[in-house]
Image (cartoon, helix red, strand yellow):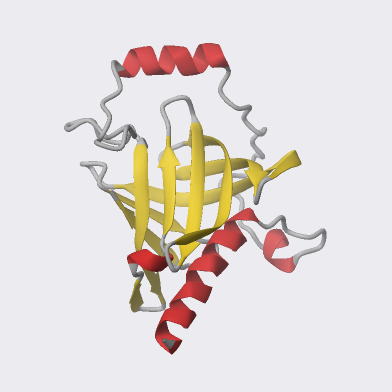
Length: 184
């Protein structure tokens, strides 16, 4: 029971850290290395026209038995569908996450996402918004709604990420080096 509690705290901590806004003067926020010498302007969420063009370019959306979009075989690099956390890697230790306390994140073709964390099979955290992939390995989540509250200013969270060639495994790397492994 103690192990489940520790894992639950770890998962909730990861979910909450992705949604918390760094305070002004936060040393962690100030210590974030820039990806280049130039600062990049914040990219705007995809317009309905851009989203429609993107979905037409990708062709028809294939859905699973729950009606959620799935990765098409042979289409590498497309972040689409639902992923559930399976494990967390930290300092050489792999912690397996049981399904009763999992976090699930769903990416839709229109550039939106939703994320739900649960404890003992009951949702205890939900957020949603837009997502943008910048470059090869930067996932930007623009959180518009969190815990049922609309954010006056969307909270932007950047994650380094990698997606397996078959689209079945998503790894999100936190600034502190923890790696969350999500699987379909």
